[in-house]
Amino acid sequence: MTYREKRFGSWRSYDIRERSLVITGKTWFGTAFRMEVALEKIKSLPDEVMAKDEMKTALIGAPGAAATLLGAAFGGPLYSMSPVQFYSVLAGGAIAMIIGFFIGGRVKACVFKNRDEAVLFDLTERGNSRSQFDAFVAMLRSRIQSAQR
Image (cartoon, rainbow, N blue to C red):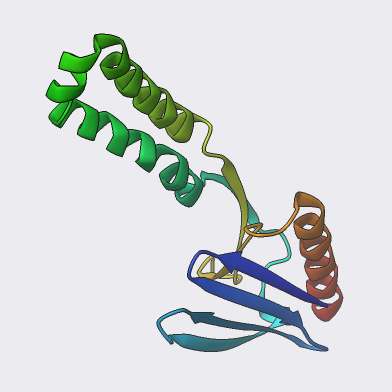
């Protein structure tokens, strides 16, 4: 079974083999990696983390921040034409910033460690639905447990 994470500018692919997990990845800038971890060395219960999705926050909030800053810096001519338009630009930018910063979204991640509690890899749901992510984590956990028997 294979699971693929899609991130902005990069991707990671997780492939469950008979006795190991192979993780490969690549970025737009050409950096590539390949890692193979034996399933019996991985703890079967991962740590779960819910983290703020900074990319969604930036994509929504940054245009609002830019509109607010540009409106405040160069708003003199706009204010002289119409104060309503000036304050509309500032309010629209502020609202977009607030939406981006507070409703940017969360990403679920599972951090897999070895028995010595050293982090081996993480697995996030980026670019996939929550059901795909949960199904892959369940499959990986069951394969780890069967490899440790």
